[in-house]
Length: 292
Image (tube, rainbow, N blue to C red; front, side, top):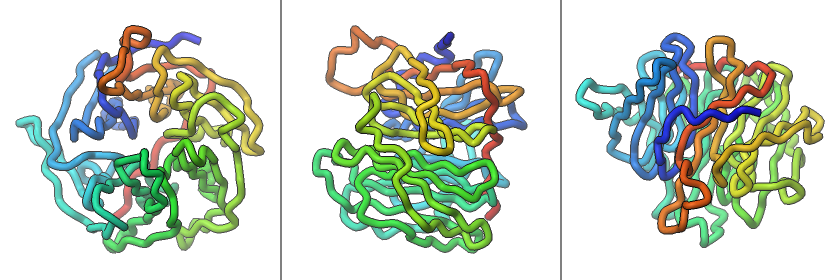
């Protein structure tokens, strides 16, 4: 499997890659740097600076919707390299030092995002999963999580996936999802990632309904069939792949963002924090835009 470095971005935490079909461009964020990035097929790479940590994004009718530190925001890029941000919904975190983490839209365009305590070493069960609806309301659906991650939806939208990537948990769950009300129920274990290399991080679903999850700390991306069987594993030249997304003209390229940990020897992974492109031999799905 060929793995191409497309941007040596050196992101502290490269996350939330989203393919923009109209622009034929890949967008993603670097959480600690508070940056929104864009890469286009001609090799151009643009960066916009935000005022808060950006954790997850989804296309909106105008610009982007984003889960940040203090709430859900609408973002627009300015020509001066900064981001114009407008608060849509504030969030009351369980305690100080929290931010949003993984998030995306369901197939109907509702924006979902989870929160976490930034100091992961505490292992505090203070994270929650929120749904932001078109009326600007925040609805909390799951609590007592440490690091909610791996959020994804089946092609028909009737199944929701969610993981907790903290070392103390490392589980992926499946839920039945009511597409009319935007409500998950019937939670059950989908994959116990302690049986596979890497902690579960960001995820994507392909056109066959298979679930792709980054194996953080193991340098792998795993594909699981809808019944939870490991189908294949792909490798990237970094230890901490963070999230994957399908894109390209035919949605058959798997883009992977990664993490560049500070304060450690990176001689064995000099490309840490880069963005990679793989050809997995399957097609993905276009990410729904937010319908607020």
